[in-house]
Structures are given as C-alpha cells and as structure tokens.
Length: 137
Length: 145
Image (cartoon, rainbow over all chains, first blue to last red; front, side):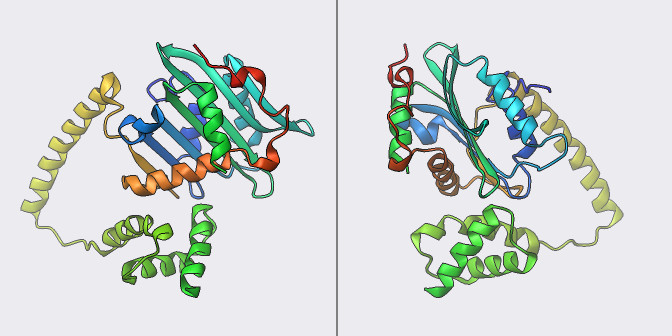
C-alpha cells in the first residue's frame, strides 16, 4: 500500500481510495476548497461515493485495511459495527497544521453495496462536526 | 412532470454508474433541449451540456504545415504543463480545486459540486432513528483544543 504524499489527505491511506476509485464509473468524487466553504469553518472537503469491488486487489478488504491504518493514528474514534463488520466510522486525526482539525467519515451501505468516504480539514471542532452530521439527514 | 420524475430516476442510476447507453443518451437529450429545469435537477445541466459540446467537436483534416505547428505548440504546451505540474507539487496544489468527478467526467461547476457534496454528507449523517444514547461518545461531544 502506498500513501499519496502530494494529495490533500497527506500521508493518509484513504488517499489511495480516493485515487483508485475517484475517477471510476459509478463513483462521484467532490473536492471543495475554503473559498466555497468559508461559512462552515472548513478549509478542505473531499468526498467519494463509490461501489467497492466485490473481488480483486482493491476489494472491501483493501478498503477496510486503508481505513483501519488511518484509524490507528486517530485521536478520537467512533465506530458502529454490526456482525463484526464496520458500518460507519468517525475519526479525528491529529493536527498537522496548528489550528486545523482533520476528520475522516466513512459509511457503508450494504443494500446498495456502496460506501461513502469523506475527508474534512478545517478550524471546526468535533462538536461542530457532529452537530452538522445530526442536522443533515 | 412525469418526464422530470423519470429523469430524476435516471440521474440516480447515472450517479451509481448503472445507466445503459440509451439511458445516458436520453439524459443528454433531455438536458440539451429542456427550457425550464426544476431547481433540484438544474445543477446537472452543465455536466451534460459539457458532454454534448465535446461530442459535437468535429475533427478536421490537417495539412503537413498545420501538423508542424501543432507539434510545435504541443511541445510548448507540454513544457508549460510540466512547469505547472512542478509548481503544483511545490505548494500551489490547493488553488482552483473545486470540482466534481461523476463517472469519470470532471466538472468545475461549483453548484453541481456542492450539490454532490451535500448528498455525500447526508449519506454519512445520522437520522433521528439512528440516534441512540451511546451512538455519540462523550469525547466526540467535547470541544477539541
């Protein structure tokens, strides 16, 4: 597994997921900068909605391994696990730039066989993020 | 109205990469001809308009002189691209970075990008039904310093 050092998710394994699935048929990848997201105290937003391969080297196991690697660096973790499988994960990573928090949000949808991965950087804190997550559904 | 409903269904299929070639043609035709689009699907128009523009571009035959200039300009363009790539690697990578890529097609339409960002965010969000006392741990409720 090779991390992408020039991407927004510098040094994170989820960068590999964005790189592998971002431009594929059936995927939607978004990147928004601070110019668009000032009001939310977010300096960078990146999301990927995709259908993981059922088999092959980049299957669910690979995706879970990428998420798991980054999870080990997280300072705050919240996961929902069902039958031993990760359903959703909310991770706050250590800051690399002073005052800029970093979050990974990950959720799987078994019925649609899809997953959603979000990376957020900004001055917002975890309480503000959770409050946004409650209000968006 | 029924047509719009049908288009919404096709758009959902398209976003999941499940549309057939015929269905994608139907979407393109719809966005190319529709005069008044409902707010919820208007954001997709630039995406399909872009495809149409690309498809309508015809290739013209080139003379050898034209080809010479084309190669020269290609070399210059390649040099500029190389320079910009290096600049990108050394600190300019965050500039001009608002985009959405759907089914491998990139669009810099901010409205469409925001719409898809909202959609993804909603997918990872909690509904009231999801909320249990233990769902959000104490530490996620705390303010991070």
